[in-house]
Length: 222
Image (cartoon, rainbow, N blue to C red):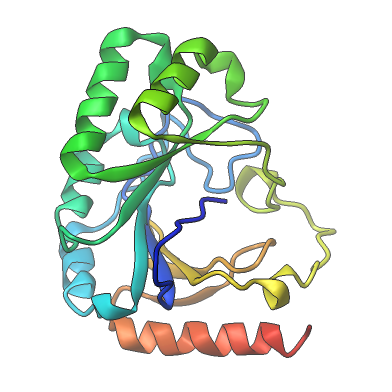
């Protein structure tokens, strides 16, 4: 999980999945990302939704889902919609590290858009990374390396016997919401199949109120 540290924590981390294209097809992928997944966010509908965002309630904004370095154009279109001064982050599989030209291209894109970077350093991704270069670049550029995560039972990792751990009732970071390529907005405080609480045809405040109700429900289960 990517955790953004800020001086004053605000209400919500809001993320976008601009594209589901990825150069890998990991069996555990919660979003079914792959080179063959054509899913992309509708630009005009996303633009309309973004225009309703109250940035005073935003802690940080994320851009991930597929692999950012595999579809820069799709990510740039969505990044360009948000307020420039907003804190922004991305999660990457780090495969760009196997080629120095791709590494520089990635760094240039990150610096241009002032993105905080979280590199997924799991056993699934390491075989496709240049570990020594990745760690050196992470130090030089201030990137964070994410270690092993629990596999979330959705997407290709879905399973029928998932039992709720009630993790969301003990979650004290900003509420996490994500807009996926179907236009659905998911509540991510959960560690199971993320529930859909709305879509991008609604305005931000309405979505936020639904998220607060979902969080209140979870907190009562503590």
